[in-house]
Length: 410
Image (cartoon, rainbow, N blue to C red; front, top):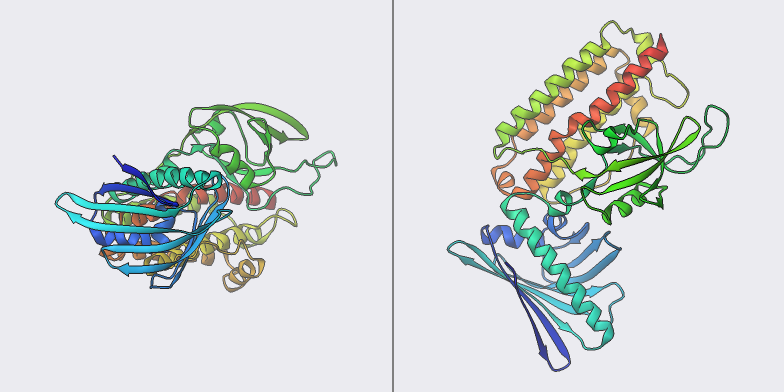
């Protein structure tokens, strides 16, 4: 339960929230001052410099884009945080303080959002701040208690992979233009998309009666829906438009073990299974077949393996940045020079396969050596575990690509 109060004082109003959280004060303090932690329970984008007079930027993509900027005015770890707040389109600056008090059964947090003015424009600021902090503090409790992010748990799930770039200019088999939309790069077994027979290579042009042309469009439409909703999906396939009904499901979330050693063991089992599947797939393939592209714009087997190597190398670097407290969120997508550099150094199929296995092994070894303090930060550790345990889905999508490339090579 979150206790909430609104107090009027002359020309200003103050919102106060009190919540008992199941974590030590140090973890609660980090949740308000560390940009990695802030993204895990409150915002979509964060940049903070956690020192007095250090800047902070907090940004939200949903339900509509909003940001607030300010500076830290007081930091007394782990008891007190204070910062200025100037929100997008708001008539003036406000102020936020967070008091953190250790209790016998947890940590009491008292959040005060003050200097909210009077009048119609400020009424909207007051209500949005009230709703935002209530939702955020509820998620903070889940973040500290279970490691779950309620924003993901509650978000409906279509059950497809989207390709990295949209279909802009392409011709179908009959030579006609392909409509703009998002390209399905894979369908996840057991989801509504699979039951509705959506397929790899389909182009989705509409969801729930709305046009979609980008991944952002898909996210925007799904944000207004719930798990269990049944929606119309407009699909272009084989030169024709189809409409199919898809039931949205809850996002499948893996059970992440509390121990880094157990997580590493489970990840090793996944990679061992992938290695076995890959070995069977490549059995009898020649270097000539592996280096041949099915077409000018499609990867060879060797290039797919190079991509998978890069994915895990980037995953290791991403994990290192999270451990350091300065997470890197964006990586370059499939840079051709990088793909070609790897296939140049490892021109033989067996060498690329061995390097991929070795890279998987390095990822497992890194997980096994995660710092104890990192593992205790439940949401950060749990998020890492979710990403790693779902890694097989990405690899298996590309295994189908390898199979098709080998068939084309003859």
